Amino acid sequence: MSFLEDRRLMVKIAHMYYEQGLKQSEIANTIGVSRSLISKYLTKSRELGIVEIIIHEEDTHPFTGLESKLEKRYGLREVVCTHSNEGESSKPKLGTAASEYLLRMVRNGQTVGVSSGTTLFEVAKSMSSSQYFPDLQFVPLVGGMGDERVDIHANQIVAKLAESLQARYKLLHAPVLVDSKEAKDIIIEQSSIKSIFDMGRSADIAIVGIGGTPEHSTMVKSYLHQTSEEFEYKDIAGDICYNFIDQNGEVASNAWNEKVIALDLEYLKQIPLVIGVASGKEKIKAIQAALKGDLIHVLITDDETAKGLLDW
Image (cartoon, rainbow, N blue to C red; front, side):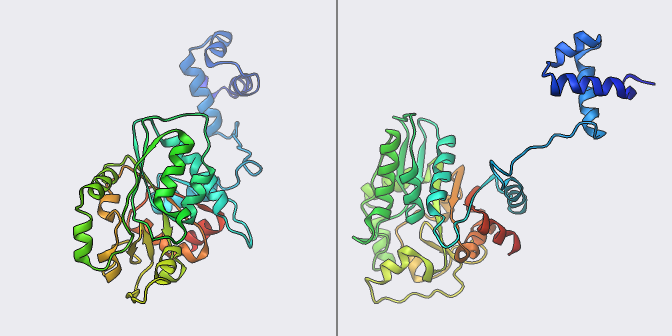
């Protein structure tokens, strides 16, 4: 019988390591074998089922399995799930989860690109830290929408995030939509605006909301309330940075996209880490489109939306 077939010794070593809390080197000295052999015994004890490691997650974070399934299904680096609120918005909880995730990932000296909307407003509102990042910079990735819901404009959100972390920020003084493609081409080449988008293109991290179909989009509804112009919404799954996308996550061909003042999605895809924050049954189609188009690397959502994405 070889050493590794000695089950009595295997159980003894497992007790010493897992229950008594001894180090592998201490066990090796006590038993009189090498540390590498102790490691092999511990590995073998797990393989044979002598030792089972159980993580009690239900009371602390019950969504680990759900997150793992989504990560594997869509090839995401990480998924963070929060509890959904029946009959209430999940956005405050999403905001807290997203602010904590962003705080974990940012480093001083980086640039973070930020879109706009009610969900990202909650992210900014939830941001709180005793850490300060004097060389961290936040930049808007999208224009504003006049005097409607100023609190959810990208400019307001970057300012609030920067204030919470004592970081720096830039403002984008441009509307989200202009009258023509020609007007857009002129505006985005203005030095003060071009410089902001140049920073956005070279950002280390982007945090973006994911808008649902146009009838569910806060910004679209707000903008269309101010104009009589009609847009073709056929085959639109949702939007990211106010670029309408189809069900495959490709930029849709329509008049809106030709006139929107926002970071182009081809540049968003070049940012090393893109965090998408969204939830709600009405956004499942849009989130899946963003995932299909490889537009985000990390998804922060609620459990009901996550289940919907797995069932879709």
